[in-house]
Structure formats: structure tokens, C-alpha cells
Length: 309
Image 1 (cartoon, rainbow, N blue to C red):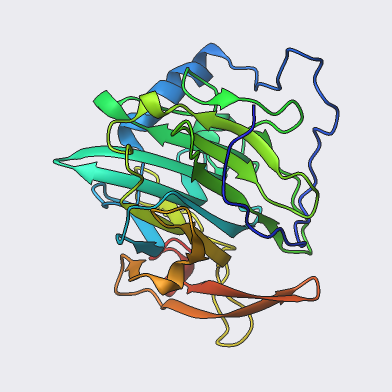
Image 2 (cartoon, rainbow, N blue to C red):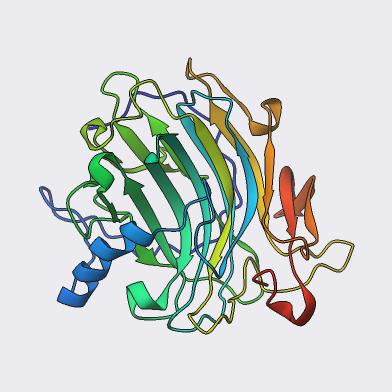
């Protein structure tokens, strides 16, 4: 099945190697093989999932932008991915997301990059998708029922080969289907057709009937119980010039009528949780002979850990 959606212009520039080029046989899909410990983590993590609607746990650091001017029908962006050194009890995310919240109840979907040794069992960079819906239920990827994988070539979750010398970007697109109300995850890129990975059925949610109230992009890190914070973004301090700590480029949203526009055309809230952080700015970034508008996260603190950098 294919979603009915507003098409967004595809752009070149994705230099992430997709290993899974071989199509699965008809009637089958690529699914990550899950161990018992992995399934247990998949059910436990949603209860403590760090989402940008609030910061309610010590050791959590957030940087990004979001807009509460919904309802929204979708969001997409180029997401910056870097291979970082993360301890077993730490986590670092780069993500796009959308959500709605009423009376401490939350519906939420996110996708992007994750380094989370406590969840995946290794320190590699992984693509991922996450949802949290009615009755507080939620899950990562396909570890439990929820996300319906459709693509026979691109799984929702896989380790990503990232070059040590070139910036790597993924362009996920979360969007609500006009006809069914389901929420699709698509990878936009230079190849046609775009990669429709699958969807989260509308029945998983009770606050998304008329779209999501909030959309955003950003980074999240979770410190270890000892208080040591992992890197966010690329783990490097900005130099005041071209070097930045993280980038999200070409952030587009679908409004209530499924019309696409830049997130900057809506009221924007900047999320920087620590006064020791450098902050955030809007500018342009050049890579692969193209220039794109993006948000640059100049995020860091003394010693490199105060703000998760």
C-alpha cells in the first residue's frame, strides 16, 4: 500500500550507505531479529522516553526548535548524523518529531538517528522510529506491535554506515495519510520513488484525530546515573565560524490542510535547557554543492559535558 500525501521536492545530498539493497521475497519484510532482553527494553523504554515536551529527569539535555501552532499533518528535515562514543548507560538522539498533549496524556512520534548502547547493545549509530499513544503504550521500531513495516528493502531500524570524513544526513518525513488517517514514515532522497517504510495506524493514538499540535527537531542526550553526560550532535565545540555542533536543514511542515511550508513561517520556540549553552542560530549550510537553510546548534559547556557536548 502507498500513502496519499503532499509531495515534497526531493533533493540530493544523502551520503548514508544503505546496506539493505536486496528486496525481500514477496510477502516478507525486513525486521530486526530481537532477543528476549531487547524486547524487554523495547517495552520499558517508552515509560522513560525523553521527549521534547518536557524535561522531567536529571541528566537530560535538550536543544532544538519546535512549534505549537498546529494542527500539523507532517514534518520532515535533513537530520545530521555523527558517530560518537557513548557509554553503555548513556544515549544520544537526533530526531524530528510531532506530538499532542492534554492533561498529562501524550501522543508522540519521532524518527531519526540514535546511539543507545543500553537499548541496541552496541555503540553504533542506528536509524529508528518511536511512538507513544493512548493508554501510555508505545514502542521502538518493530520490537512490539504498532508500526506496520511495508518496505521490502528499507527497514525502519538498521545500523548506519557513517563516514569519518564527510557529514551524513538522513531525511525522514513523518506525515498523516489524507484518506486513512494513518501516520507514515518516508525517507526522502535523490532516488524516485521516495522510500515509504511503513506506518503507525491511527488506532494507536487518541490525540491525533485532527493532526498533531506540535512539531519540532532537535537533539536529546541522557546522562548516566553517575551524572556524566554524553556528546550531543558531533561532540565538538563551535568555533564561531563554519564549525557547528549540529545541523537540521530544510525543515518543512504540513499544515492542517496538508500544504507544505517552512517551519520558520510559524511561531517558533527555541529549546536550550541550560544557561551554560551557547544557543542556536539560523543560517545556511553548504554540502555537496548545494546550499540549504538550517538551524545550527552551537551547544556546549565548560569541560565539554555541561550541555551534553
